[in-house]
Length: 377
Image (cartoon, rainbow, N blue to C red; front, side, top):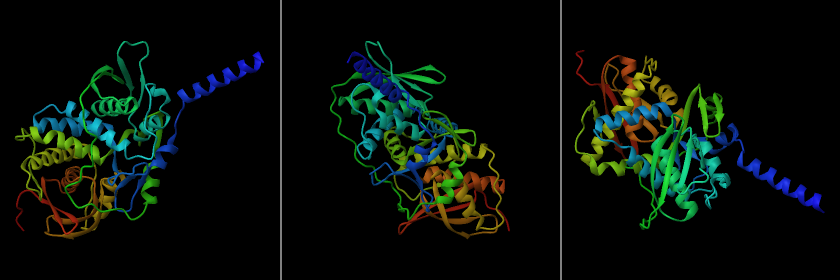
């Protein structure tokens, strides 16, 4: 009887140890994300009306963010963290996954897998602490991972918290949480400001191409072509935008060769700053773009937009003899993100500064790419 009880106890410890140290693989990542024929990337776990996301190199995102701060002339890290907190609460309440519950993150099995499939890193609770502290290892983004972790803790404990973070080392940060009595309503969906194209079917060819170079480093840390990536939902970009708009008055730097079919002056400044930051970051990556005929933009869109979920090019019309084209998009992640990438590709192809003009007409998104200066025939 004693031996049997001891065996049962040891078996329980072995089970718990396996649960705590569970390793994930590439399979869970591939199963969650679905590349669509219109160039979008769909989250199979989401029940939201906007379940779309983008596959982004972590270094690129950091460059986008730094460039955005420079152009806006403001520090945006805290706002990004709060946008991430609100975003995570919304997404967790619109997910087929079981939400985190209780005060022991090591037992949040489905949520830990969620982090892994987004490439955010991994986290755990620090033991023997008088205050609540969580350590995040290999965070995909400091501000985003901080806000997301705080949100998960609030949902798991059903209590609001204030949070601060500190960089523990190059590869880890600590999030400290403190109870907050504030009543904050649950977030609702944010509608995009441009026509949305719903996907028709899965694009198995693109999925195979992108995932064949997927390599695991550790839980929540994986790379494609030796470059670390993470996956961020469009909802996060929209919430971050809303958090920042009230504080924008002007642009401190950057180019303004972007024309948007919207009336909100603050949003125009935001989209311009974000698009120009992404344009420069993409251009500086040294992408090689060859354009011999307008139809080449369909392949360019497939390579630099669709493979990452930024959108797709449906058709192209030539508008001048100097590389000017009007591109009709089958979908778009965000005009500033996708537009910045397209303009960088145009400037790489033609070796001069360009400009971009968007149009939202009758449910169709199109963009004109052309030279920023008039060229004599």
